[in-house]
Length: 65
Image 1: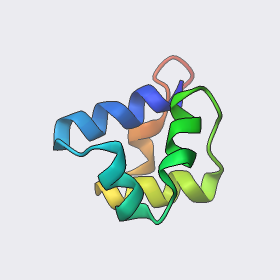
Image 2 (image 1 turned 90 degrees about the horizontal axis):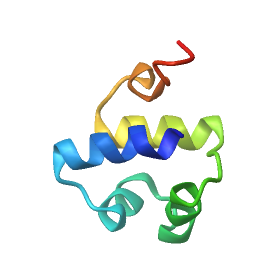
Image 3 (image 1 turned 30 degrees about the horizontal axis):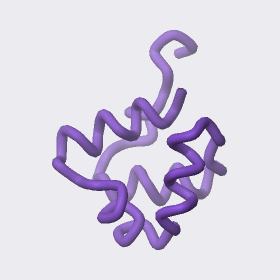
Image 4 (image 1 turned 120 degrees about the vertical axis):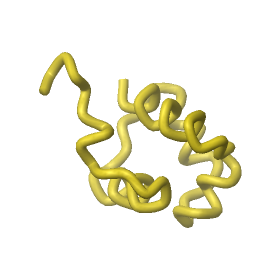
């Protein structure tokens, strides 16, 4: 699940979901939906990657890639 990969990056950088929401311009509820299993749009994945300062490759599931 993509959220696990995002959460891993958040933990590495000590960034809360609230802070990530502020950094990306996404609502906290939107991030909560991702945590609950909804898949983000590509544009929102780009926003998250940019906010965390990581490549989109960081969010590829190693099992599928």
